[in-house]
Image (cartoon, rainbow, N blue to C red; front, side, top):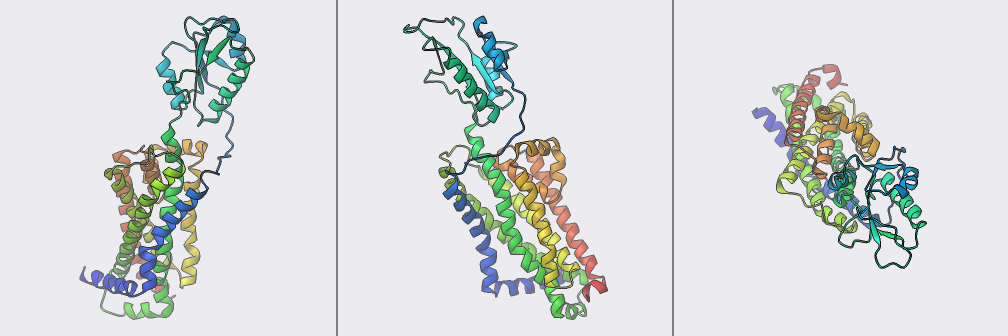
Length: 387
């Protein structure tokens, strides 16, 4: 253990004596996360989602609909609700299980134009769902043609008819970009240091000098790994601070502060997922560095890991892909690297469970330890070390 700590201290001393490395560790992750967040803040008001979705069957209900509206409702594919539980169907609209709910008053009547007493039709929809918004637009157009002023709809000032969850907008948005920003920042810090720590020493011939010392090869590997893990913790802290500072700015840009306030527990969970996830990244980068013959080869292998982070993180913002991911259940938290991304998304959306976070942290630690042990095994292969 003493040899491991000695090697780690020497590596860290080299890092902390280099001002460029210090800035890279402490400032680069913060600047990447905060800078990207500010870039999104400056363009968010002009950005419009153009994602095309597969057409889905319309699920819409009416309650107390008079017979004279049967043809119009049939054209819109709005069917009579199985029961009159309005709150139940409103919740389904909010949860995107139902596209629209149309509620007629029990005493609905077709008044003559100019009458002072007009029956109001309540039409509940969810503008966050394309099917719901499209159906609401069609309904208003068709019903408007049946006027003037035979009846009104959605004129109650004390009711909110658009039943989408306003906080889900920013939560979904943040869950798509935060994991990508944070892990990209940590990756950029650790990639060069990991490559130079082993492949760089190998290229310069310094590693061969270390291997002829009385220190066990496994201890050298563990010491170098420990030093990079310390760097990963620092980079993770910097990235998380950048995230915490930028969240209010993003909320302001989206003209809402709802749903972006997180508790201390949730920040701890975010930090735990980031740190342990960075341990896995470091372990993989060190394996690449150990296998590689020189720094160039190590840095050529490293982008493969970045793709493993970027692709699922970006695809998860798609509603159809997200549903497939959710169908995997606990399996998501057993897959190294991906489990950290999924946990970050869950915590940002406030849809996490303590069990899933614990599974992620446990799996990441186990995989990181196994990775470091593998680096030690690779150190014992003379043809790799002397490459």
